[in-house]
Image 1 (cartoon, rainbow, N blue to C red):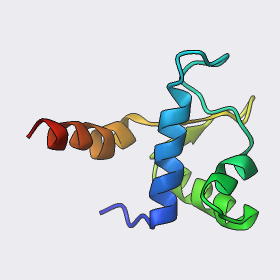
Image 2 (tube, helix red, strand yellow):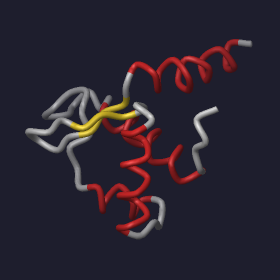
Image 3 (cartoon, rainbow, N blue to C red):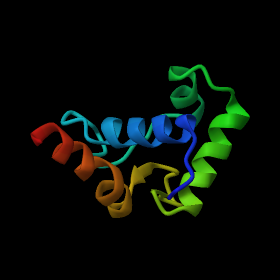
Image 4 (tube, rainbow, N blue to C red):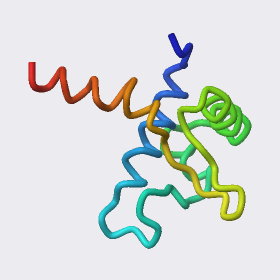
Length: 90
């Protein structure tokens, strides 16, 4: 449906998880470097940036233009996170 690669899914999932750190200085946002995010999955810089752009185009993540911070959208929640919760409860 969203035509995501494993890399795309891993990047978006990590953004979701990291943006929900209760001790974050910027709650709700991933504010680390994109390169650092890619290194967690052994992805190159270009691959990581392409994945971010694809996720933005598909409206699964959004970028704050002033800060460059990233976060997942309601669409990500509806399509991926909420389904994960349902599967756990089933």
